[in-house]
Length: 383
Image 1 (cartoon, rainbow, N blue to C red):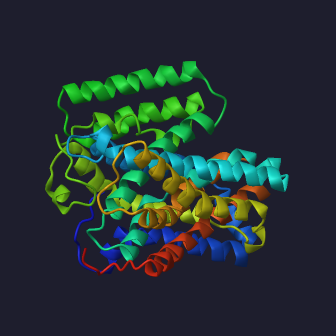
Image 2 (cartoon, rainbow, N blue to C red):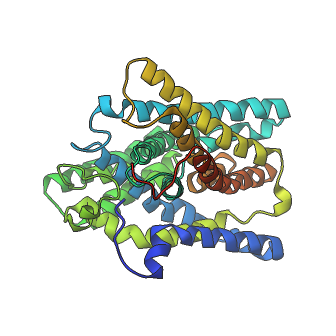
């Protein structure tokens, strides 16, 4: 996701996803000061519009990054080069999920069992922002973290589709709309249509209907469509400013939706993050501990096993620095919050407790900074 160098406060707010933070803060204050008013607001159609329609474009931009990363020159183009961070991403999902399940069983809270995927999430934007406060700009830990987060997003989309259906699964309904959706996307590609709107509205609309009526969460509607958009032949790398000048359809789609998606995230925080502070409970600490403990343990252990198996980690990345990366990846926030709403669609105490855990995962940022300073890392240092 390339960050344009636009001067001014608005650019800083957009580039650092601070609208999401603002929406979250407003929701928390509103829910605790005027709870009934907030609940009335959330119970309206806005929840559906934001979570099931607006978030389509958030996951579309995540899919764009995954698709570009697989192009020649991209971090996922060579399995040999990407193997260690990919395996580390798997460890960063397996360990938190396992730790979550263990804690749920020890606490005797079967009502929380469906939330096992919540601590698997890594918020790529906030993790990257935290990494810039910890590591020098040219440190190999930063691209390692970004690749790990991209893989985490890709695996997270699969988990969301497979384990968190939005309703009764219907293969007939799914196929009735998805086959035409893929057919339209493929036809647009073959006809060399370069305007992204037919892909997003035409093929994307059919895909949304396929997921909605097929029982899969409709927020994933553009995931199978975005890869069909015409794109560059090579990847320049995440956050490379040269991407801003690339005229291909996929990049123009991202540039157009960059600001609207941040506005959508403001409303996502506003609609989903309004939890009473009294809702803090066992589920909160289970999610938080799974993220803060499971992420570094899983990432570090799988990196260690990968290297011992003969794979090569990025040059200059020590195990100690990998542990700092693991702490940084413990920021679940956006995706963890979304997973919580999908895991507990009926609401109640389990959802509120899990949401607080996802929100409190922000504590991973100062912990990563503290840990980094303790091991001698400075963001302004030269390697």
